[in-house]
Image (cartoon, rainbow over all chains, first blue to last red; front, side, top):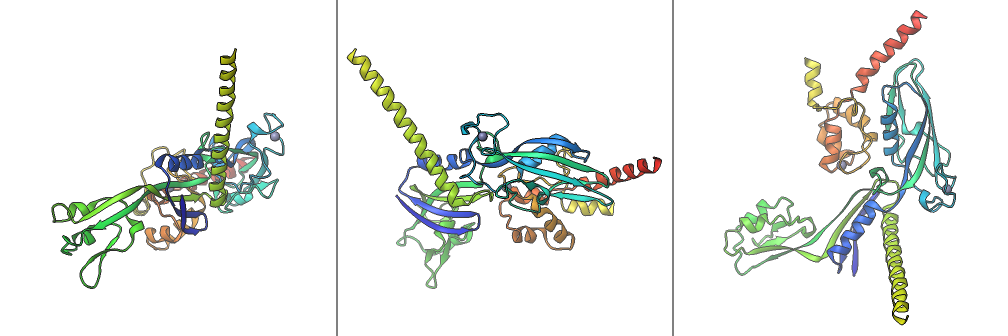
Length: 280
Length: 94
Ligand SMILES: [Zn+2]
Ligand SMILES: [Zn+2]
């Protein structure tokens, strides 16, 4: 297996994994989407709310605010030793919102959410939660906890996690007459003509395997061929900002590792049991 | 009608106005945070900048996220005016 990082800027990363199967690539993708935990507001105690948004919509909006996650100091509630429905300081974080519009309209922003633990704070200060008319007030306590994307999309640490086959473009120069039809039709400008009129592959990674170039080629059979390498993948992972992308990927692999170990343990226990049965 | 026309230019077509009267926090489709980009978006578009360019500047690449800002109408601004007036009236009565 070979990994090559193509680009990493801020919250997103693009890399090539060479030498794995589709099933493994999809496993990685699905674990990232649905099993890597992150923080989100789950329970909201509304003390006062006479804004135009109903309590439920307000709570939904609070839940969707991405919170910076500290995976090392917090436990998943189902794995926490407290076993309490309300949670303990190890499995939940409290945020408080108390805003009143006095004489003017006021927008309630995510920066008005005061976290008890400064590590669990909204990733952006400028998210509008609700707007208040003069005299309206919102007072509430919100409880954030770790959760998984398979339970609710608010616990999904990524806003995009995709992979596609590595494109392979081959041109048969013996039959290609350099008409340039394929260069013109390519929607991603993968192909280009060199100075001596030869069709060349310029941005291979941009190719989306649409095969328009094959269909437009006047030669029969076409002088150009496009294929996806089914053992090589271009991955794109984009974090919502709750965790750094590297952490999301390493966490996903750790979860996969744990699942495999659990499976191995279960199967060896069962094998031992059946051996004993045979001896009896 | 002039005002209606200009609002249609930045998008309309809401069905469940009660649910979406304020800018959604995340993109419905992919989950990217878009709520915090609304105020800059609408300010710049109202100043005459092309919406597509503003979206590019804000780093909103996918069309699922772009339609979130492009098609949004901030109805809560209109609603709040009534609440404000009602509350002031009630206070005067007292
Ligand atoms: Zn606990
Ligand atoms: Zn989106």
